[in-house]
Image (tube, rainbow, N blue to C red; front, side, top):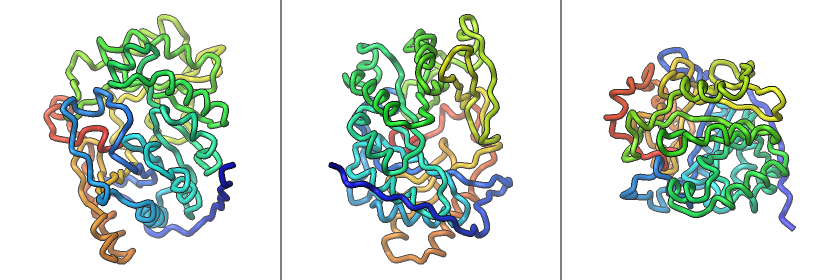
Length: 343
């Protein structure tokens, strides 16, 4: 039997919060634990591949927990664990338990492709993981293989069902909608919420390095909503997390679950952005679309004081721009591929 993981939550006073030049208070940290993945999704990994970070350049769990602790002390209260695919890194439940036990952290979430989730869902739940986002872009086996370059649809679906059985609530199912690729499955995905306690979320396709984005592949929020409303009544829901929540969420009469839209391209949410990203190699990014501003790895490994590491974190946030570029310029930016960022 797996060893039970004891979780103890603590509260703590918060020092000066993490505020950028535009008054945005940062409370949400996304932590990429690896840049490796068991899938090769076309919108995430360049077809030519990319150079993975060397193993000794990846932050250890102890280093990640130190950064989480320091950020919690300056107001971060939500952490999302991402990859690559986080479940390919061994001992992840122990990291989750450590984050959950960090004073000041209130919510610990994870984004996964669910291929390995069936065998790990229970241990993650016991470790205190509270929220799951699952990436799934098609319900068709041949199309899954074309998009992900792997034949793992059955395992992904099993992982979703295991997460439901384990009691994760909410579970958010993310579909990246690509014109001419999978946009004919919108209604099939809506139906997944009829008898399941999940939120199906439709994401506008974003341009990243060598991911095949062009104007024809972008299906806008307005277009997705128009197609869905031809068949279903959408009832807008109040978002309890406030303006920093990026999902436009809707109920459908008679459905157990809900649907939502992430409108990164046509209706950005920069003015309320409260996120900072820690990449697997220790780099800090204040914006998904911009290069990292700092790298903490060297500082963490040369015995730098907490105050100095905190200074690097604050310098990263202070460099954050008011908003990302308009779409026409975004497609020309030289950025990391999505697999190296963690979304």
